[in-house]
Image (cartoon, one colour):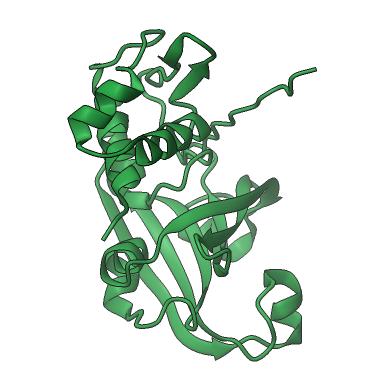
Length: 242
């Protein structure tokens, strides 16, 4: 079951995206939110901190919490790499129909070479997936995933197609907290070019993600090769107080 603060954050996030709290307006006060959600100040503060980290709001000392999220321009699509969104969630936000083709499903053990690049210790049992992501009929990404079976047991081919995060959060009750990402550009090559219907010399966005649960343990590494017409990145940058 999700934490109270996750539910509060999800509700406020949906309301902001729906326009109930417009850009540059103040959210209800912390006390009002506590009364509305029937909880103490701690989960409300954590929910607001989560929304701030995602770029939805900004706390202003002595003035409350201001909405800073704005809708994306019409026609914008692609991966929102500033958040931990699933492929169906990304498609839903853009009015696209998601589909996944499972190309590889295998259980392997991390060897020294794989350990060096993923960070999983040698000997860790892993589920290795290769999935083609399709949005409204167009292939948009090739995703290679390594998931620790010690952290996330029970992944099946059906779960790999319908959504591993639903299994992780709803079935196992694991809280997904942080993802560290590196974004580079690489040529598609023959295999990815064929899957994405691109010339092999076309440059793709290559996103390497290391994702951690609230325990601090890494449970997943994803190497995502994304079609240049689908990829986008939102980055929230802050300047430290001087």
